[in-house]
Each structure stands twice: as C-alpha cells, then as structure tokens.
Image 1 (cartoon, helix red, strand yellow):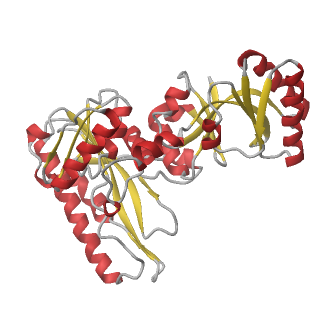
Image 2 (tube, rainbow, N blue to C red):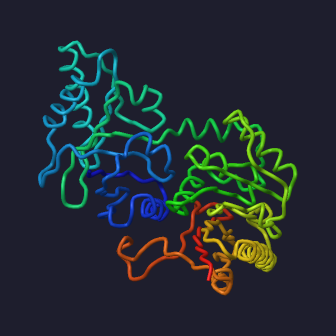
Image 3 (spheres, rainbow, N blue to C red):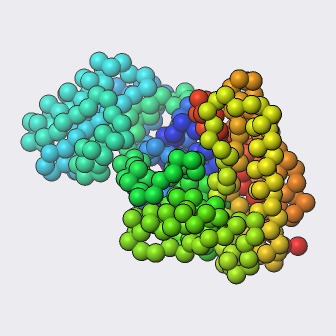
Amino acid sequence: MKYILEIGKFEDLALAEMKSVLGEESLKYLSGRYIYVETNEVLDQEWIDKVGSIVSVYEIESVAKEKISRDKAIEKFLDIARETIYGKGHIFFESNYLHFKDIRKVLTESKKLMSKENIKVKFRTNWSTAAIWGDGWPNECIALKALKFRSEYFLLKMVAVQDINKYSERDAGKPYRDPVLGMLPPKLSQAMINIGLEEDTKVVMDPFCGTGTVLIEATLMGYAVRGSDIQEVNVKGTSSNFEYVFDKKVDVFKADARGLKSNEVENVNLFVTEGYLGEPKRGHEDYEDMVKESRQIEKLMMDFLSNLSEVKADDSFNVVLCLPVFNVQSRGREIYMKKIVEKVEELGYIVSTLLPAKLLRGNKDKISFVYGREDQFVHRQIYKLEYNPG
C-alpha cells in the first residue's frame, strides 16, 4: 500500500524511526514534512499509536500532474460522507497550494450539498490534532488534504492521527514528576524504543528510569519491561506512575547502572535510556565547568556500557541512549561527548547507522542526530549501539 506520512518537527528522528519500523526500502522519498511510503503493513490508528514521530497518516485518493480542483475535493467529501457519516459529523480540509478562499469554498459547498442529503456536518478552516480528536475522531470525521508533493498533486484522506491528548494525559497527569530529571518526552521515548527494536526483542530495560516514561511507553507498545535507578525516590516514583497508567506493578529496583548484575539484566536485549543530563542549566554557566561536567557524564556512561558488556558478554543486545549536548550560548558553541563513540568499539559495540546518506540526500551516513529546540540549554544526541558476542 502507498501512504504519505506527515512528520513532526524533527525530520531526523522520523526518518530514523521509520527506517527501523518500516524498513529503509519502504521509504521512497522525502519532501518537506512528508514521507512517501510503500509498504505491505497497514498504517492505521493502532499503528500510529505506537510510533512517536509521525503526526498523521494519509491514504492516496488520487494523484495528478495538474492541481486538484475544488470540485474534485467536494466530490470526494460527498463520496466518503455517504459511507461514513450517519449522524452529525465533522469535515476538515487543508492544502499547501490552494488559497484560503478556495479551502473555505470546498468546505462550505461540501456542507451545503451534504445537508441536501440529510448529512449534518460542521467544519474548521484551521485544524490541529487536538481539534480533530476533540471533534470525535475517528467516528464520523473526514479529513482531506490537497497537497503538492514534489512535482505532483495529491488528494489525500487521513486514516490516522497522533492522539496528543493521550500523551498529555499520561505524562502531565503522572503523580511523580521531577523537572530536574530532564523529563524525557513520551513521543521521543516511543521513537527510541522503535529505533532499537529487533524481531526477537524480549524485555526493554531503562537502567536510569527516572520517572518511568520509557517503561510506560514500552508497555503500551506491548513489551515486557524492567527498570532501575540509583535513587530510591525515582524507583518509588516510577512505581507510582506505572500504577497510575496501568493499575499494576512494574519490575523496577534500586541499582547503580554501572554495577548491574547478570541476573538483573537477564533476558533484556534492548536498553533504552536517557541517562544523566547533568545539573539544570540557566544559560550563564562557565564554559570550562560545563566541559568538566560533560567529561564526568561521559565517564559515567562509559562505566555503564563497560559493565553491561561484561555481564552480558554472551548475549546480543542493543542500546539506544541520549547523551547530553550542552548549548553554550555565551560562546555560540556546543559541547558533545565524542569520546564515547570512539571508545565503545573497544568494548565490542558497533555504532549503528541511523540515517543512510541516500535518505538524507547527502554524502555520508549519520550515526546520530540531535533532538532539541534552539532555545534549550541541553539538547539530546541519540545513538544506537549493537553488541554481539565474539
């Protein structure tokens, strides 16, 4: 089947996640914030609920070299409405090349013609994922998009949309929160899990579990989980948050990630973690102090990875981790933790290619990407490490 995926703000994250979830060969080309996909998988609401970087999924209704006319869009609205709307419904229409007056004309004319057939609808000229869910998606909702994609014109029908309300409910509503811990976003957690998954993934573990976001998202995605943290307050907080979402207990315990024992990581073949991002930053920190803190975090993560390669020396496993990148605004510079990448291969790890050059239309592969807003003092650099015995 052929789909067009609308991605979020972070292109690299979406490409890396979709490469892992759908396979590189399924991703045909990228244009703006859209990916053209050909796959045997059904990309529906159940599918989008398990990925973090895709805003919406569209089936292709028609494609042409000429612009999609207003009449064509109105006709498609009527055809779908006759099959799907039985009470009161909502219609949405958006375009990246039609003028606002044309968009409004499509909506008003569609509503008028539907009314003649006793189909009652309301419409919005501006939409968002929250608005669509607020209007009752997916029941009796129709969302179409007229899109110029590369050199062709597509008429698209939305079949799935990210449920931002559910993310907010389980994140903002958690009983235990601590902004100092970095607050790993649920959508980023989902994407990191997907980037690390293999067909034989048994247990997903976060050895710096903080407030338990990775464990919650992995469980919602259908995987067994385990967590640990060096601070007892985080262990208790993760337990509380997990029970808040699932009303059941989680396998979480107090431990220093640098000293995990073989029985504590048994059957785990995917480690997904943010690790430690350092002390909270205000933007006026001394550059040399931040370099020193960066090296300390680097050593912490190397000790963790070294211990892991020892206690699981006979097993294959993946590690997807965030390393902090300090944005020193006073210097206009960023501090990266490059030594980890240089040293992990000595421990038996392979640093995976997350973004092949041909996906990026570039000259070389990328083994990492940075996630964060320009105004943030700490960004997250994402890596995937593979460990195979021997």
